[in-house]
Amino acid sequence: MSGSEISESRSENSEFCSEASARGWRIMSSVALAQKHSRELGKLLAPDQGWKAQVSAIHRALTREQFEWKLEKLTWNRVKSWLFAEARRVDYEEVRALEELRAEQEARRAKLKLAATANMLAAHLAAEGTPLDSDQIRALGRIAGGMDLSGVAGGAQ
Image (tube, rainbow, N blue to C red):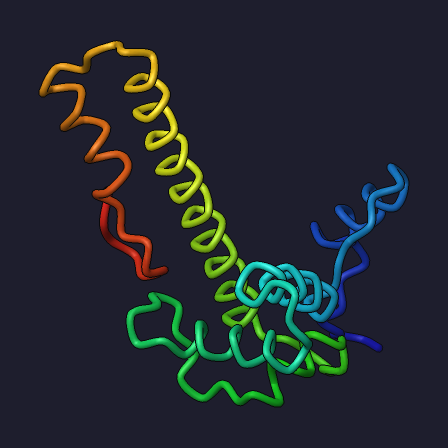
């Protein structure tokens, strides 16, 4: 093939893939990533519920108006195809939305845990008879009660 545009040299991607395989790393496909993220999200959004409730919860969260990475035309069946790795391909925007939703949900859980810890600390200090001054009470109140726990970004920033 004279004048062919095919390069004889290796691309950066092939270099990375060969290095990854030499080191024993596994490169996940977008379908595998979507399955992994959707299964984790299902457990976060609808714990101890069936797959249908999990798919519905993920779909609702990804199409929520306030979600920065909202997927406009996402269907319930598309989310189901991710959960069971039935999708032939998953777009970058879809994987990114799943990653962002997962990060948002993990941050929400961390805030809930922090609020519970602050409430427990205040209760233990009160039981010990250690008086809290007004500044400490306000600070604990901000930590425990001033957080947006609705799952929508905002609140304690």
